[in-house]
Amino acid sequence: MEYRTDLAVEYTPPSCHRRELRDGCAVTRLNHRGERYVTIELPALTDHTGGAAAELIRRELAAMLPGRGLVLVVGLGNRSITPDALGPLTADKILATRHIRGELARAAGLEGLRPVAVLAPGVLGNTGVESGEAAEALAAALHPAAVVAVDALAARSLSRLGCTVQLSTAGVSPGEGVGNPRPELSARRLGVPVAALGIPTVVDAASLAADLTGGRREAVESVCPRGASMVVTPREIDLLVERGARTLAMAVNRALNPGLSQEEISLLTS
Image 1 (spheres, rainbow, N blue to C red):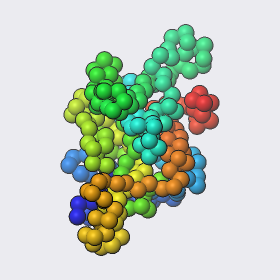
Image 2: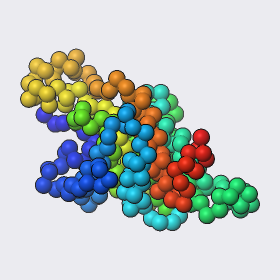
Image 3: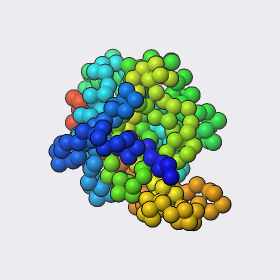
Image 4: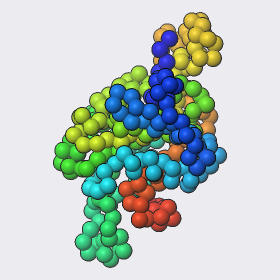
């Protein structure tokens, strides 16, 4: 059976992985098809606020981005569906700074901020516009130095939900992990570097059944009535997504404006 997952560590051979410990967290690095992937294994976000985790993610994200220039942050997903709301909720907490300049910046004591623009494009069913189309059009208008795309991910293993963060230079294809791929946000399509990051919030039910039962066909068919695709998510998904969004937003904000402390960012985005 083909397992459905967005995590590179789950669909590439372990011989390709380089694993190390950073600040008490396991960090796995690999190159796949010319792109870099970093997977960070964290304490469960449902049990921790993620301040230290945000700093670890921040360092890895900063290494994937150019040091200067406007950055467009895109929060992908549907805020009305909790497991898919990670991207929009993260976007809500990003410090948009493109408009803070000149006298406004001096009066607010915010001179020297890196320009940041934020987009939460919603989903095709609500807007009639593909997320990739909206991001491509805005990138063409703003000419950013890079794009940061945040999206909820699908994992093969339940143990990875809410305690894994993946960063990559490969961009993202919204909906791919749940079998509904949409136009991608990638360097090839947008014309600028794209750093993607996300947290797995769902597991494909058929993949889970096959994994737990050794691939027994009847087990897989029992969780796919009439061939319908289903996903599994934790009971505490609302807490996981809220804390995950807070952690990723802090990491992005600190990566883009490292001169601001976590406390200052919290005040500016509250």
